[in-house]
Image 1 (cartoon, rainbow, N blue to C red):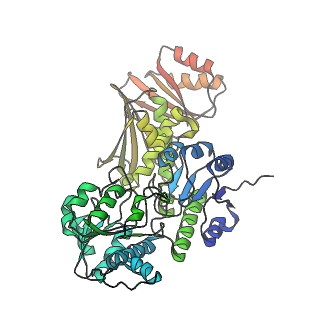
Image 2 (image 1 turned 60 degrees about the vertical axis):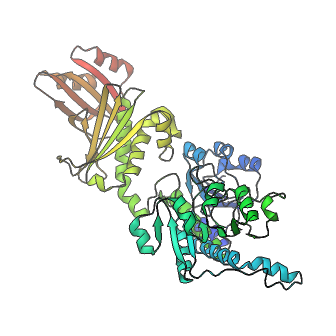
Image 3 (image 1 turned 180 degrees about the vertical axis):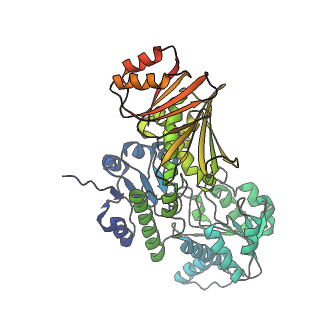
Length: 534
């Protein structure tokens, strides 16, 4: 008999403590099967809810397509270059990493390479082992009073800056997302333009993610802007440095030395041209390779996956906002209400829509609105995408459909302490629905439909009637439904003026038949008849 526990596949080696943490007291079934080729991974992945990798296993679109139960991919490390994040997002799979577990390890390795490239330590060691004694050849430079340019002031860049300043270095930083006040607190000089940093520095250390914007950010042109004799360290991502341009600069002397831990192709091919440069230091992607770092990232990713599968908590996701356990508990009622409002709006609106506007009011503005908006969009797009739509891929699906999403935090004063409102636009037409909570957070209500005040419990079957406001209409509706063996659980009435159009909302205990709907629609006092399933 197969286990009903969520299954986790550990496809790359992680620490034993990480594996033990994943077992989580027996709540998860953990399978360790490393070194699988893609074809083998595709065969077994359908039975797993989570996948743990490091840098060896490639989580491709084909793997994700086969992973019908997969909810989480956990990368025990910082970069997710080996995971097709776009494909995972489309499939509704959360991709998590461990940005903190190897911070110290990588910062220390970067600083070690900084010292090595300043003093030619690996070359001197190799020379000594070859039986030579060549002191003049390996004359180096001091770090003291030199200027270090750090490209990217995240966790690792910050730790490297602290170590460099302890050695008496001046630190100049480039990071387009770093605030001036944060730079001041770190005691680094912030430059707005990368080109302006180049002529100032004696050393450059790279700590940027690899994106279309940062790929080859150190190219031939920028290397030419540097002081002659600059030294470069890259412990971040292969591809940040144009390796061809770096090789030329090393041979010309424009770059006095370089140290690389990461490469555009890993491992580098046998004919890798930089191998022939005498003034370069190589390490085989060792930034996170310490016993402490491997234990830390293994435990960190295990805890994150367990929290996601068992508690709905999201940590360090790269394709979805993170929500801790406390926040998840607070926001959960809003997610339920948001899903119901989205489902309701989807059944009011036409199939093709241009724009959806989500408004938060009262105490709701204090909530993590992205998570709630995702719940609303998930409910709204279930009709278009079915069960494949979830909170991870829903924004991507909305963009694919050409549905613009706008979020507003309103200061409008209403009768409700907290409220959500969803308006859907299709050309010149608009439908809308709003909701709040009555008393406890487990008692949501729909309180606006197309600007009409109502009170509807957002569960089960809702019959929505636009009818003429005339004496006896409520009795007629109740009698007709009773004769059709349909029980009314609750009723809400709304009208704009006496004798005009009225909106009648009924919570029903069962779904009306097609014949019942046709008879209601044929009544001359009925302008519109619709069933909403929640």
